[in-house]
Length: 127
Image 1 (cartoon, rainbow, N blue to C red):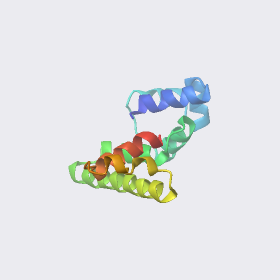
Image 2: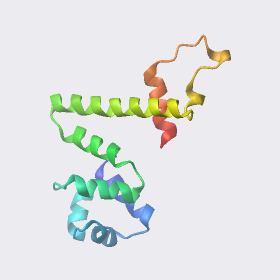
Image 3: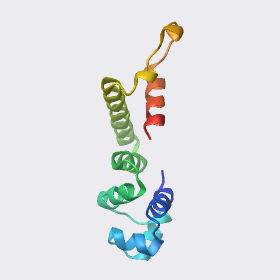
């Protein structure tokens, strides 16, 4: 999710105008406008606050942000972090019993299901 989508989602979730949202974030409206247009550098604190206002997991937002701005080697590390957290979320879901619908049943026990397809399903349904 890019900055524009994040800001628009936060505005929609809160019912705030761009100016009102900027005030909630401790920014001036022109700064939020620049952010929305992909310009400027903003702290993780701003991204966390936006994610919370938008109703999105701040961890996901920060991982996406750092992955996008990282160089090639660091991007791979951030992608591994994101995948590791996704796998951990999947494990927690299964352990809690909430993920029972993702496990093979008798009727589909002969089908091959990869871990990545299970994680993708988990991420999709966990949103």
